Picture 1 (cartoon, rainbow, N blue to C red):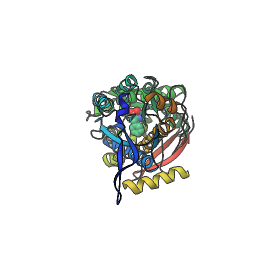
Picture 2 (cartoon, rainbow, N blue to C red):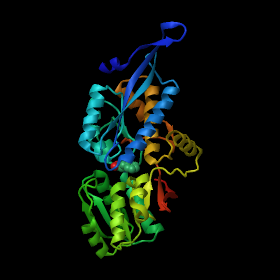
Picture 3 (cartoon, rainbow, N blue to C red):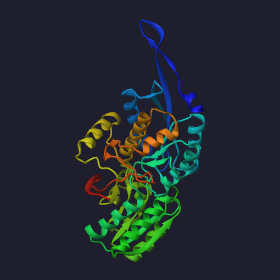
Picture 4 (cartoon, rainbow, N blue to C red):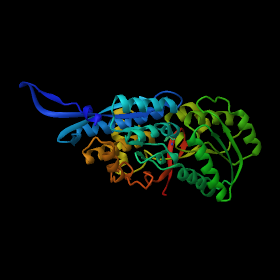
Length: 381
Ligand code: PHE
């Protein structure tokens, strides 16, 4: 009920006619929670850009009709700095103060896991564009995501390394303080061993945003002599780990997951990340007309090509706004129900949620070649 007051009725100013209540126009707030600063800030920039573009298009197309009132979106973007507690405060602020009708975010699974219980308790739908840890949507029926989950991408990489690259031994180095990194490490290991591969060393550290020295773990890994190095971490630490590994003469092929997707991976890692392979949600080289149209639109608007975070944030916001429009309501439960039954067609095709509000989606495998992301393969679930 309180949220109804968030609809602001304004009178249109008609030039030349004077001031008149020509049309009733409503505005409601939509929140976003992303890491705009900190060690993974490119995630935030891309995500915010994607959401902002979807909101702009929604408003330009006329918004939604809510109780006979044409209603558009005011987007409020919050910085979680990559920390769960900061994300949680942002969620409280968006819900209690801004009375948002929904939340797009977060990126990092550990932050989404802190935001989701707050959104769920308030009955505010949340859709994470990119949090892949399986637990995120299990928090409750108001929590959705626009991406595949880690059991899938961990297995995809295990298969690729074992079967396509033909490498039979691997070492893993991961951050055990983040559900994403920890989960992905486990799924890769399980998948690799199931195929007959051997994980010859399994090493952890505690906080990738703070760790600068990976040599103690890399020394053990080098001694174990793996054929492949799996790094299910975010780009900042991946770049640092590989620089140190190459510096120590550990030159085996390396790979990871979607956390590698950043223009800063190569900027920080240079030649040390060359040849790296990782699973991801999206490739700008995808020849489908929907992808190419998005790439052109996004590049024109922001001056650089979209990464997976931009693409999925655009889709997540588009899916949410489509449900808002179809429900014709600002009530959380109405929008949630419309989301559950979505048939929204995004950049990568039609979305359909399973019983856990996770969409079924394929993965792409990307390789860094001459410092550029190069598309290798698409893997269907
Ligand atoms: N999947 C990561 C997580 O859950 C976030 C991420 C997605 C990072 C896509 C980069 C690209 O924490």
